Length: 128
Image 1 (cartoon, rainbow, N blue to C red):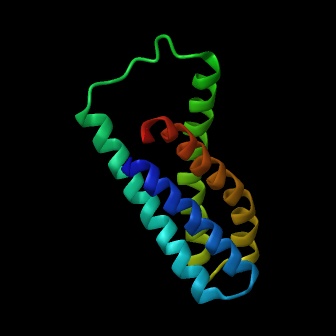
Image 2 (cartoon, rainbow, N blue to C red; image 1 turned 60 degrees about the vertical axis):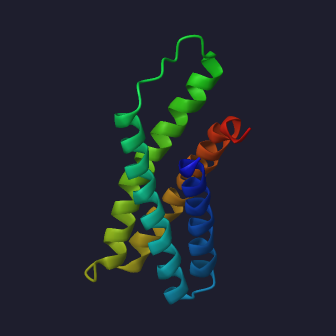
């Protein structure tokens, strides 16, 4: 359940960061990006801790559709992690022009949103 809340907070944070970037409110954009990065980092820590401390679940008997859905989510999450580090690095680099940051951010945002939404959808059965 904690993972679902962190996924939701990450989703809201990245959408707010995007909104403020489009409004050219850079300070608000930086704050929301920081919140998104912090919640995503915490999400990864909680996820790893849960996987290490709990016995592995078998995917035996799980439908192919769910396995594909899970696989696409994991791939998107890994890409999000890597791209977010690149985009933040570009934003912090004074040598590179901001346009590189914007170009990579335009690639990152839809993947991050997909990863967060699919993470929430996979957590829905646990809210019963």
